[in-house]
Image 1: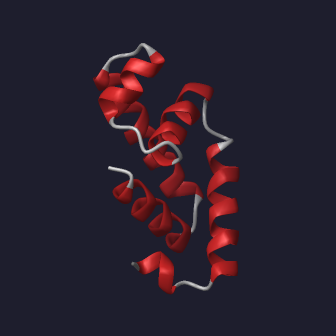
Image 2: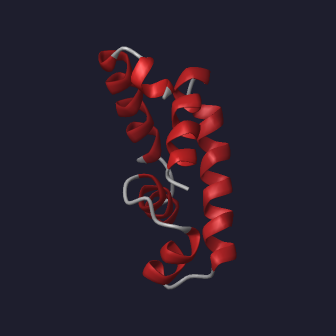
Amino acid sequence: SFTESVDPFVLKDLQQEIDRQIETLPTRMQEVIRLKIKDSLSISEIAARLNISEDTVKNHLAAARSRLRSSLGDVAYFILVITLSSAS
C-alpha cells in the first residue's frame, strides 16, 4: 500500500499532525472521526455507540474532512483520506 512505501518517520510526523488537527475539532466531531479511523467502525456502528443518527455521523464526518482538508497540507490530508478509506 501507499503508506508502506512512505518513510516511517515522515508517516509518523504526518500522523501526529493529523492527530493535532483532529484535537481542534468540536468534541462530537472528534469522537466520530476517531471511531471511524482508530476503531474502524462503520457509520451504523458509530451511530449506535454514540446514540445519534447515521445521517448525523455522515454530517460529522463530512464536516471533519472539510475542516481537516483546509488545515492539513496536501500530503497529510492524502494520508488521512487513505486511512479513512482503509477503515471503510
